[in-house]
Image (cartoon, rainbow, N blue to C red; front, side):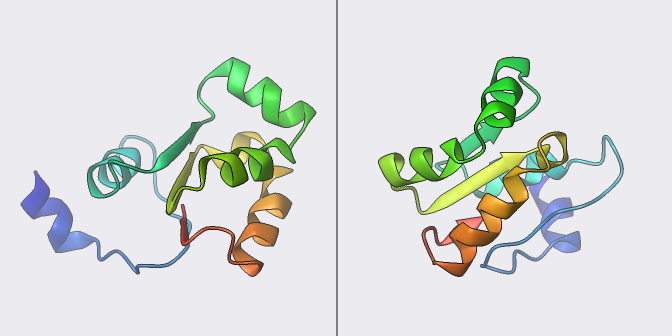
Length: 98
């Protein structure tokens, strides 16, 4: 499987969005390539509620954890997080944010 993924996807080694149809392996490839990343999984309803109520929590979590890579899976479920993500990228608070 890894050989197929490597053939079709080159990691840009910077912050990026990964778009594609459902079930094509977007989450799988990200998790394989960044196993030690801080994962914000917005498929979990309690996580969605937490970030919808207080999107700035993302900044607090990242400052506390000091990760080099952050993955936000299903970010479209909490659009208000995008402003926080933009701010974090601009301030270089995290090396890689996906």
